[in-house]
Amino acid sequence: MTRFAPVLAFALALAAAPASALGPVAFGPTPDAAGWEMLTFRGKTPAAYSAPANGTVDIRAERAVSVLWRPLPRSFADAQAAQWRWRVDQGVPATNLARRRGDDRAIALYFVFADDPSALDNPPATLRQAFSKGRALMYVWGGDQAAGTIVDSPHLRGRGRMVIRQPAGAGPWQAESVDIRGDFRRAFGREPGPLVGLGISTDSDDTGTVNRAAIADLVIR
Image 1 (spheres, rainbow, N blue to C red):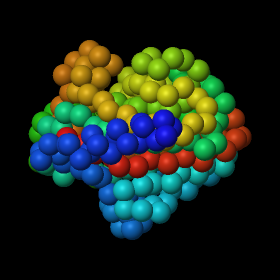
Image 2: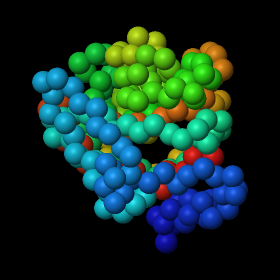
Image 3: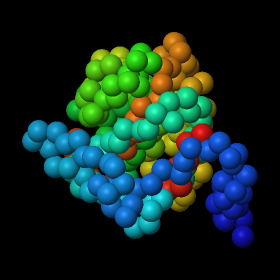
Image 4: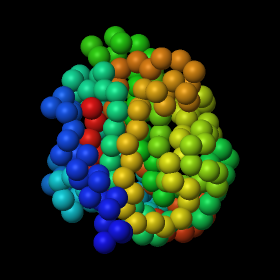
């Protein structure tokens, strides 16, 4: 009975969510149909993302890396918090997330904030555009450091910071609830701008291993 307690608690929290909740965020019937786009990298095998249910995305990377990205409507600009569930059935070994070409991780969930509120009038069309005029706060299941550690992304030149929520290793469904603006201030030392997009990545190309994972019930409020 006790192993179902975290899931039950999360379900009750969702039921009690205020009417102002902006989510849940849809992943199906397919990620493409729900507005998600794939960012791939030259010379790299892309990961596979599928939506077995509207509120769930399954993730598989076999020596692969890619990012799912979607812009968010203007109504999400002032969002304060997020909650979701995630699990890792098979994951890469613990890695140094600060080391380029050695920073594999099972899952990273990106919240992308524009630097300037004027971005709402000309929203980014791609993730690369969003990174060029904004910053990404990334919650990570992976890495070789303790939960709560903040790591500078080795790829984003100061525009991406990772917060480790779950260190590397397989694990059952875990419920997360985060203060995205408070964590942004802690990570970047400045106020966040409007929230303009979301991303999900998985990465196993450096270690040549396999990630099998999922995210479900993502709610932004």
